[in-house]
Length: 110
Image 1 (cartoon, rainbow, N blue to C red):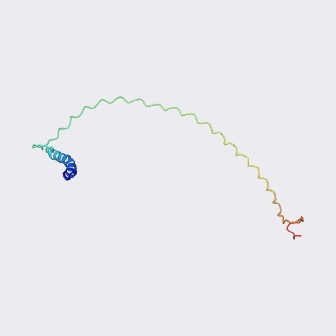
Image 2: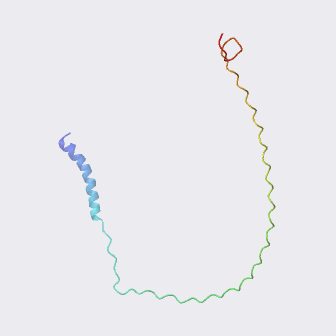
Image 3: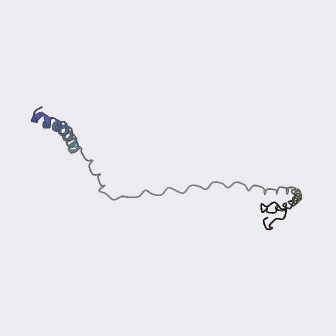
């Protein structure tokens, strides 16, 4: 591949789309400024007062509802559970044996 093909072909593939993008940005037209009115600005007159609507006749006073019946008394709390039985006393620890033939523990060895 020659020098021209090696460097100019990829360069052209990059430059052509970039030139199109820059040209399209240059051709975008900005909108014109809005026109300012030359005469004085006058606020519209307020609307005429509406005629008052006739007031409805007062409604009769509501009668109070009867008081609800009192709630029944709550049930008494259940009795507490009985205390558990005391644990049995631990068995006495066996006496240490001194490994002699006599029955006297912690005695002198024979």
